Image 1 (cartoon, rainbow, N blue to C red):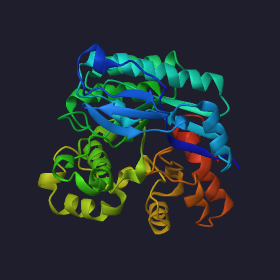
Image 2 (cartoon, one colour; image 1 turned 90 degrees about the vertical axis):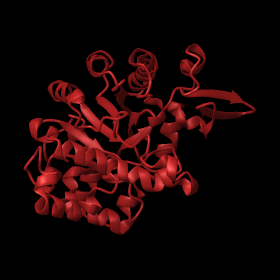
Image 3 (cartoon, rainbow, N blue to C red; image 1 turned 180 degrees about the vertical axis):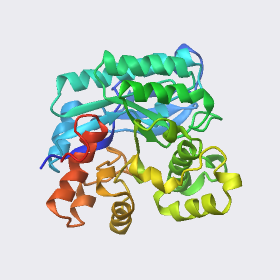
Length: 335
C-alpha cells in the first residue's frame, strides 16, 4: 500500500544570509555551532532544528520506519518573508526552490516538491511559480494564509491564483504570521489557537471572496486539517444564511458547497476529529499530512489514519489516492 505524506517541511542546511546582506535582522538565518542547528529571526533565537530537516537520505530512512515511501516537501513558513521587498525575498525563495528541486531530482521515487514564492509581489510570484513548475519540475507551490494586510481574496492576488489554475500547479496553504500573536505570546497560543484560526481565515476568504467560484479548476489544499474551518462550518454556514447582507456580498454560493472543490490534510491529532473530517469532507478530499519533522506534527506518520480501522479502499485513498489527484498525478477517483 503506497503512503504519501503531503505536508513535510524541508530546509537546506544553509541558505543566503539576507539578514547580514541587507542589514535586516527580520530575515531568518541559521547558526551551526556547538553541534546544534539554530535559526535566528528578528535578532533572537527562533527554533532549533534537527539534521533530518535537510538530510534527504536521513529523512528517507526515518520515514521508512513507518512505511511511508513519498514525501511532498515544502519550506518552513518562517521563510516566506512576505513583509520584505519582493526582489530581496525572491533571492531566498529561489535558493529554497533549487534545493527542493535538487532533492526531487536525486530521489524521484521518494520526493515531490512544492516551491515558495514572494507573494507580496504577485507578478514576481507568478514568474517564480512558472519557473518552479516548468523548469525545476516541482508540482506547485506552498503559500501562507495571508500576505501582510491582504487576505487571500485580495484583488491584488487574483492573477496569481488564475496563473496557478492555468499552469495546473498544486497549491498548499499553510498558516503563518498567526493572528493575535502579539496579544497571546504565552503557552504557545499562536500555534495552538492562532494557527487553526489562520486556516479558517484563508478558506473563508477564498470562498466568500469568490476566488474558488471564479477558478473551478484550481487544485488547492489546506494544511493542518483546514484548521478550525471544518469544525466551525455549521456556524459559518448559519451566518451565511442568516446575514447574507454581511457574508454573501461577493459570492452567493453556500460555503459548504466548496468542500467538494478543495483538499485537506489529516494532521488533526485526534481520532474523533479525523472521523468527523472524513464524514464532512469525504475521503476523496483528504490526504495524509504530518507537519514533519516538527513537534506539532504527527509523530507516527500515517498512524492517525491506521488507528481508525477503515476499510482498505478508504485507507488507500487517504494514504495516496487523494494526494496523487491533488498533485495532478492521478485522475479523479483514482486509488
